[in-house]
Structures are given as C-alpha cells and as structure tokens.
Length: 477
Image (cartoon, rainbow, N blue to C red):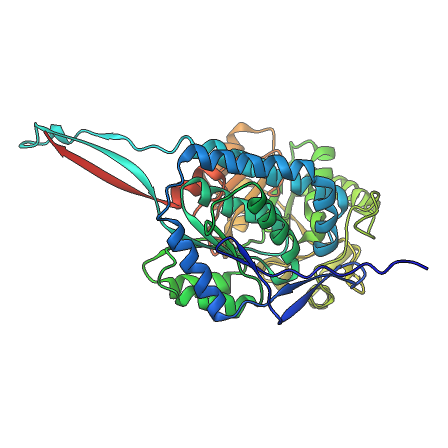
C-alpha cells in the first residue's frame, strides 16, 4: 500500500513568528488541479499586526553590512535548493521546469545584486558654500529608508518579482509587509522561511496571504505604510495610486509590447527569438512579444520561419523536461484568451498557427491580417498569442508602436545604426532592445515603463533609489 502524503499547511509570518489560521485556501497544481498546499487567509487584524511589527522593527539598528550578509545567505540558499523550489514553481505557476529553475537562479542573482548594492548607498556633497552668505557652511546628502514598504506581487514570476521588491527594500534599510498572489503563495512562503532561517531580524519581513482585494485594501488604509510597490494590472495600479495619497508608489503594470523586424535584419535570428519570447510562460509575461511589425519585403520569409519555430514548441506537463509551454494560470484565463482570438478572427484576423484551447492550455497562436484597433492588438492579452503585420517605412512603424496606451519595452531587429538611434529617440517605452525582442531583461538593469505601463523602476540599484529619501545635512561651521 502507498503512503499518503500530507498536504502542507502554512500560516502567516508576523514579527518573526508563524501564525496559524483556521481559515485557509488551497494552492493548486495548475497542470492537474491537485492541491499542493494550503495557505492562510489574513484578516484585518493580521495586516495591522504585520504593519506594526514592520514599523517597530525600524527602531532596531540593521546596518548595511548585516543587510548584505542576510541577502547573500538567502541567495546562496536559493541556489542550493533550486531544483526543489523550481519544482514548486512548475506546479503552482505551470511554467516549464527549465524555466522555473531559471527563475530561481535569477531570484538568487536579484538578491545577490541587492546585497552588493546595500553597501553602496551614498549621498553627495552639495556646494552650499558657493552661495553668498553661506561661506562658512558645508553640506552633504544621505539616502535614508522610506520606512515600511508594502510589496504586492503577481502570479507569473512569483519568486523573482518578490525578490525585486523585498531585496532592494531590505538592502535600503526598510521593513516589508509582503502580499503575494494568492494562487502562487507557496514560493513566497518558502522564501520567507529561508529569510527566517538565515537570521533576518524579527519584523523586517512579514508575510500576509489571502485575497488581494481585501488585503490590499487593509494595507492601503494603514497610514503606517510609507510606500507601496506593486506589479499587476493597470486598474489595480490606478486604485493604489489614488488611495496612497502622498505616499510613495512604484507601479509595474504590463504592456502589449511590440517588436519591429526591419528589412535588413537577420531573419533567422529575429524569427526564432520572436517565437520564443512570444510564448514563454504561456505568454504570461509583461514584456512578452504581442505585436510584431515586419517589413513588407521580408514578411513571407519571416513568417515561414516563425511558424516553423512555433510549431516545434512542445505544449504539456511543466515537469516534463521536453515541455516548452505549460498551462495558463487557470482555465478561466485560457477561455478569456480563446474569446479574444475568436473575436479577432470574426473581425478578419487570420490564424497562421494555433488558435484553439484544450482545457487550461491555449495553443501558441500567431495571428495575421490584424488591424491596430482590434482588442488583440490594443489590450494586453497575457497569453500565448502574438499578432503580426507589415509596414513600409520607419516613421510609419514607429508611429504604430507608439499608438498604444502602454510603453514598457519594445524590440527592434535592424543592422541600421541610424534606424536604431531614431527608434531610441522616438519610441515611447521604458526600454528599447536592439536586435532582440521586447522580452529581454536581466536583473541589474533599470526596468519600468511609461504611460499605462506604470511609474518607477525595478532593478536593485534603481529600486533602492525609489525606496529611499534624499536628506540634506547642512553644517554651519
């Protein structure tokens, strides 16, 4: 007879202690819908206690080198346990195992960079003595922590995006109340356990799980929270900004990212990278390629190659090493993508490949004959669907890329330095990637958008600037 494996049940983490709750929810394996863990619903008192613990912890000195040591130890532990944690990510997100392990490695790097940056926070000298009447004065600035940071994170890259908020916040000397996405709570819990194990001082990191709308509302009401850092939908981002008042807010809100393939591009490289970056994590990536503009002279050659690469991608069990694309986060989201594609087809779009759903899976889909006013082009699909269209000249395609409510990142394949520099000056995005797609990101670079894609920057060095205040000190000598 086989042994029954007990489903783990997790509590909240407040002021250095785990708080068990009777009211729990299931976290599911997105491939087979099995329960992999149970996590706790936080109530308003729990959130109040977490914020109080975070605020009180700021009274205890936590010097830069101590922050460095803690973050470095957590990074090292993530690498030691990358297979185990990667398997958890593959289950709770549905992303392929190789991609999931890659996320753990990136999360470790994000914390390692944050650790290094904790030792580099500095101000600057200000020449106040140059002002008439201030000849006997000297001044300098220093960067000080904002205080309590509420970090609200999404389901699609749950571990690394948490590290992009928690790592810089702790590096800067802040304390954190973390609210992860409900459907991917386990990776956040494991990370919190590791922080506890390596000796993070009590109250510096607090974890509250449960419904985003309720917990988010309680965090927004609490005036002891000094800053909100959020990755998610524009609608929720706007709500946070409205309710935060004069407090600091950093928002990463998604996009419908475009990639241009010019007539002088390396077509093989462009088609391969575009196919790969349109569908990784089942297209559930903020900088996933959604709109592709191909110069009319190379359209057929590019399309044939992109279709061939797309058709070679294996859709299936995320824990099978041969799988390239796993399920979407839920069948509800897969149905939504199906509806969007069907709507576009009814408006004249052509399915080049894919175009259908199997339960929680949506097949990698390329749509041509699209128009810029279709939902599939104007909104963020957040699924394994990419649209392709042709263009004739540089100015036209730049205008079409900019004809969007979003502006996170864009890609441009070209061997023309003149076109690359024109695009760098004129395309309205937070990042332009030359000879790669919009989907390129490494963890030390500044990352953030314009327009409806949000405000503020991630990347540990840049997030630390967001999570500190500049204070001037003037000495009258």
